[in-house]
Length: 249
Length: 249
DNA sequence: AGGATGCGTTGACGTAGATCAAAGAACGGC
DNA sequence: GCCGTTCTTTGATCTACGTCAACGCATCCT
Image (cartoon, rainbow over all chains, first blue to last red; front, side, top):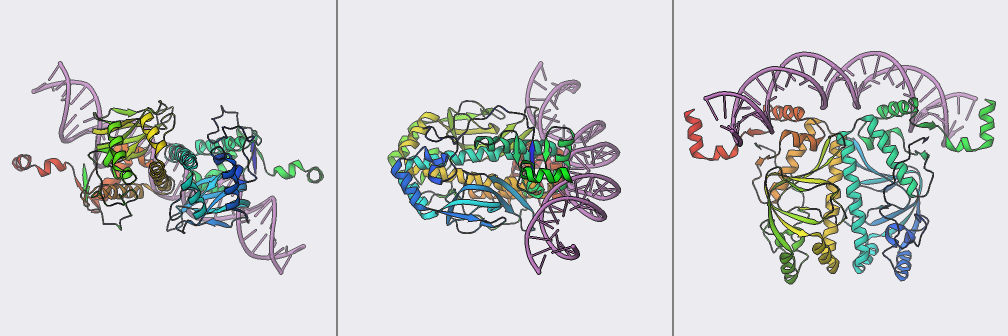
């Protein structure tokens, strides 16, 4: 599903943007050029980082890593979307974040993963072994500094999300979810008025502390009130052949 | 108020305990001996850190720092309790954490504070200027590493709290709040069966995403069910003179 | 002493959102 | 094509928690 019509917001500074101006916006094709670390690295380090990584892909719904597993790898997303979540023993799930291209998974450098992660649709990523990543970090203080900044930024976002979960109603939750996702997508250099939502209502609900029915009703209401415009299938809309079929139908 | 009777839990590892075994448990009298950084510091660095800090106190309800203010200082709590919170424009509040002795405030090393902090009861702390703390960190990679570990640990706790806020009911929220606070106090070397709760019902509610009435009712219910034992005033209970007065009354 | 203030508890009642249920759309497999 | 599965939407109903209100108890101030 795709929604559009979100009012433009004063954009927050791109916290992880490359201060060298070497890269135009985010660089998502290769992790060594990813803005969240590139700025701290010299060219020989970039080469080293590149030699340490390998490209991997994940199918829809496949698992990148599981909560409690030994943290053997660090991933950098290059294509697609990933959900991070915690499961309670009785099956209740809390999604703690969605990852977009350019984001890292498993950066904590702790012994075990604190959450599970799986692919929403096809995903491409760069994989580092934890050992090589950790040893690289050990020898490059400025890289650690970047890492710490990234962790700090995540912490701020986590606090934002606590406010959302604890003190916002359903409509506010859905609205700020759409806006913050829109802002992140914009920072990747994508469209500001149309937003693709590859995750299910269930995913959104588990992210927002709601049920899938409430999410569905709330989105319906936002569309009814003309706050957003729902485009059930953006791909088909943009495909003339299929459009004709719709016209014929 | 004080509660007791919380069942013993398998204790989590003290993530920030001093691995050198130099200190018995937490050292709360002075920040330079605080376990969360001590392990990474040599004696000359400890001395330097000590010379950079100054002891300060805060009265009940006074403000240590405010969201959005320039982050000029880092504090290390030595006595008392502090609440960290975000305010929404309409006054709704989300408490994102309570600090105990040994905890740091303002460690993010970012330009501005991401939350407000104020004292719950009298508080003692050590204060570092941000500049001196940051320059010290700049020259000591291993200290930065400790800092990053601390941030990572906080992030894990933040995710725990998201699960609580998004997917637990009122009774589960209050129960896990009491248990996790108990665990933290135990790690400070204090009593495991009695827990002091200096914050108000309102504070707990704003931490747990509830109203103060629901918190009050839930605690009453836990006491009625003999899950916890509520001691309205532990100080007075332990004071023989006052006890006699109660006996006379 | 007496009034104001803050905090906690409890009751009565209202409601946002959960739960239960049904149906349709899209998709993949055979 | 048909069937099973997954996802979404919508309606009806229920309930956990919020809201409103009253009251008791400390503490503090004058």
